[in-house]
Image (cartoon, rainbow, N blue to C red; front, side, top):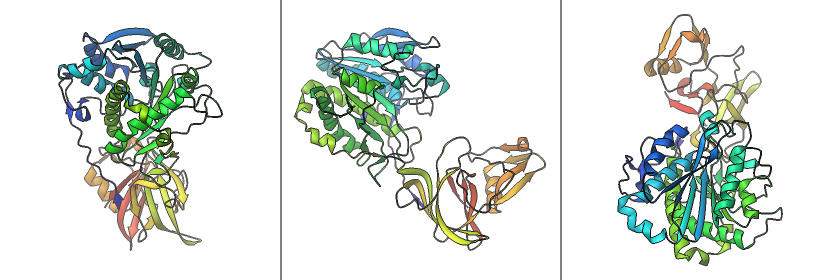
Length: 450
C-alpha cells in the first residue's frame, strides 16, 4: 500500500491576538469543512474593536445578511482582497481571520506601523453568506456570483463592483478554493495553491497592469515553493467575460487569483490556509519594498498549469477481476463525492493519474462481497464491522433502519442487483482478496486493511 503522509506541524493559538510567527498563527475552531457567517462573526466583532481596523457595511445579501468590509492603513498603494464569493469555498476566509488577528496583535504593532501609511487594505471576508449557510457555490438566487460581474443581477455582485469602484485598488486578490484533484502539471504533486493573473481580453494580451500582477505572483511564488515545494500551479488563463477577476483586469486593476487546493492527509485544507496567511503578509512587504518590480514575467509563465483530474482519492492499481467471460486486470478509481462514493473510473488509470491513497493490487483479486441481511437491530461497532468485512460482507440489505453504524466507515445498502465485477458508477464497497483471504475492504474512498 502506498500512502503519502505529511506532518503539518501547525500550532493553533486561541483567539487572544497573541503574537506568534505568521506560519503558526492560527485561530482555533476554524479547522472544519464548512465555514458560515456565524463562525466568523465573533472573531470579526472582536477584531473590529481595534483602533487600527475600520468596519463598513457594504450592503446585504439576497436573504438580508450583512456583508462587511474591513480597512487597515491609509497609504497610496491600495489592495483589495475578497473571499467566499462561492459559499462552499472557505479556506481563504479562515486565512484572512488568521491574517487580521496577526496584523492587529500588539507584538506586531511596529510591523503594522511600518506599512500602514504606505499601503491601504480593504478586505471582504465573505461575499456570499447565503451560499455559505447553504454550503453551495451559488447565492440564494441560484446564481454563480463570479459570473455576474457584467450583468450585475445579484445584490452581492452589485456591492462587490461598487466597493471596487469606490476603493479604486491597484491590486485585487480574488480568493477561491479549487477542485481537490488538480495536479501541479502532468503527473505532478497535488496543486495546493494555484495562481493566475486573469486575462482582460480573448487574446490574453499582457499590458502593464496584468504584467504587474504576473510579476507580483512570480515574487510570491518563491514563498509558496519554499513552503510546499512542487505544489504550486497556474490556473487556466482563458478569458472569462462574465467573471470578476477578468473584469477587474479589464478595468486596469492588477488582479491576482489564488485558488486553495488539496494536500495529502489534509481534509480541511489547513496547509493551504497556512500558505495563504503567509502570502498576505509577504504581499504587503513586497508591495511596500517594491522588490517585486524586479521580477520577470517569464518566472510567472514558467509555473506549470493545473492538470485536471490528475489525482483521485483512492487508486487501486492492477487488480485482477474474474468474471464468467474470463479474468482481466483493471485499475479502480474512487473519489470522495457524496455520502456514498461510487467507482468513478475503470481501466488504465495509473498511467495518467495518482491517488492520495494508492494500492498496488497485482497480487489481489476483486470480490464484490456478500450481502448481510438485516433482520434485527445491529450495533455496528468498529470491531463488529471489521469482523463482517473479514467474512466477506460488503453491504447490507433489508430494513436499513435496523443498522446503528457507530463507525467512521460508510455502510452501503445493497441494490437490487449485486454485480460480480466492478462497475463504473457502481457502489464503492467491495473486498480485495489474496489467495482467497480477505486482505482489504474498500468502503467509499477508504481502504481498510483487514
